[in-house]
Every structure is written in C-alpha cells, then in structure tokens.
Figure 1 (cartoon, rainbow, N blue to C red):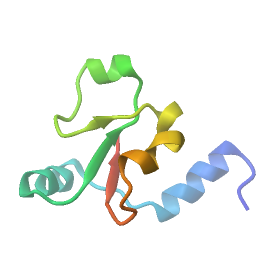
Figure 2: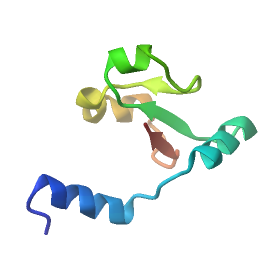
Figure 3: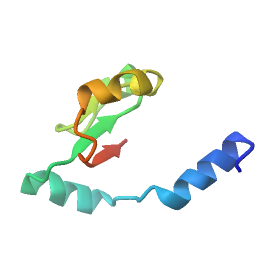
Length: 79
C-alpha cells in the first residue's frame, strides 16, 4: 500500500493510461466522446489552453467532476 505522495503518484502511473498529444488531437477532431479537463490554475488556463478543454482547477476537481461529467463511461483526459 502506498505510504507517501510519491508512492501514490507511482501507483497511479502504473494504472492510469497516458494519451499522446497526437492521439488526443485525433480523438478531438474525429468527434470522439472525450472530455479534456484542464486542471491547472486560472492564470495558466488564461495563458493558453486546448480550445475544446474545460477548466476545472485541481483544487475543485473532486467536488465538481461528477456534476460536470455524470456519465462514468466518458473518457476523461486531464491536462
């Protein structure tokens, strides 16, 4: 069982799939059912973001993600 923050990150990286920028762009341009959540702070979002992205700062993620994306089968990409 992970005991530190680094352990938790390492464990998550073992099970959460990664998507390349090219694959994500292909999904977005083909109209695939994928949601891009930009979890950066507002200042970073304002500095530039993926046009199809939705801003939801990391500090609010847990409280709002189910409200924003109620279908649990929807693929989510975080940035």
